[in-house]
Length: 206
Image (cartoon, rainbow, N blue to C red; front, side, top):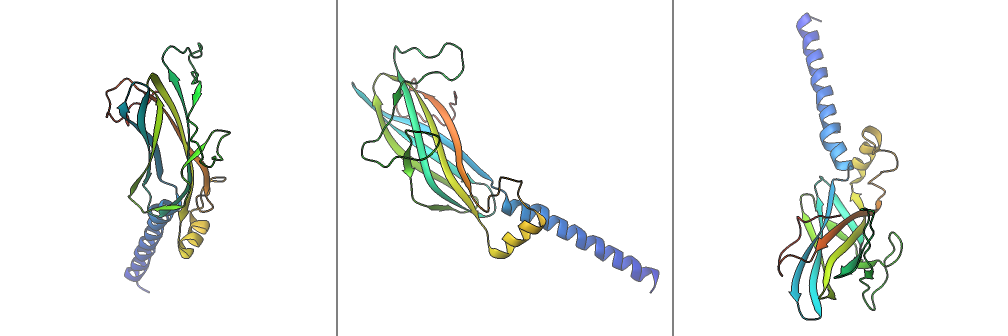
């Protein structure tokens, strides 16, 4: 075997290692990681003499390369009306009043007073942003609204990809998106000070 043949074998070997490394790094790892972005937005649509009608919008973005299966999207919300005084220590102010939908099944996350925004299983394809909306009503003198959102999700992988990820790029211990993540959570605090119709997607006081 000539020196040229040896050099060719070495070059091919290096290229193969680089190819496999790139596949593991940019395909398998990205397929197995849960690139899911979650936020909640708020719009006050109507303010009358006794009530305000608003809409909560739960925004889930699939930033990964595999389909995400979402289920049990839930909400918990509390509000404060004018004249009420909260805690004085500057951390976790008090919101005395609950939003409790009448006749709806109770949620199951993080204690009591949760209700479902979407209980059914839904699917979000890679690169897609899915919005789940829930209209709410509060007293007209409401000044602030504190909202929690949470849902379960799982990364949908094909059989061979699932096996390869388990061998070459396993997820961190205790955070295995293949088996499912429970209660992925977000919370936001919104002010009622802006004009009716304003979207509060960028106002985060929590």
